[in-house]
Amino acid sequence: MKAYEFEFPEDRYYMKNHVWLKQEKGNILIGITELGQTMSRGIVHIDLPEIGESVKKGDMLVAYETIKAVSQVSLPFDAEVTGVNEKLWDDPNIINSSPYSEWLVKVKGEFHEDSVMNVKEAAEYYGKLIAKERERFADN
Image 1 (tube, helix red, strand yellow):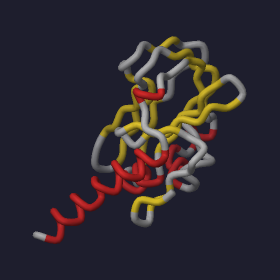
Image 2 (cartoon, helix red, strand yellow):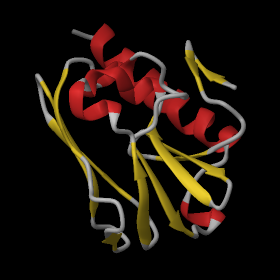
Image 3 (cartoon, one colour):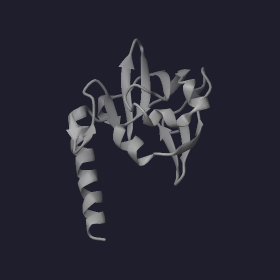
């Protein structure tokens, strides 16, 4: 499903902070949406958690720094880190190369569907966000 030119695959859930979640073999892969990655070009540093680390609902899971800003990823549920994308240590910018095949971390945990958006809700939410931003910049 698309919101303007940005793709949102139907096999995952989304959060308003440009994060996607994909359930896979008892784990949840966590990544950044295509839109989020477009906004985060130029990642210069990333802080990943340790495998086995427990992260409480709302606490920082991942932090990454771009040329313009520092962003954090947190989750709406408690989780235990079961894997990290090791490639990011050498080149944190690879998460921009393939938004839905490159992931940040893998966790064990359970989320309630009312705490995340399905693909239809996400496309609608992000579509409104994009429209508002484009309108704002068109006025300048």
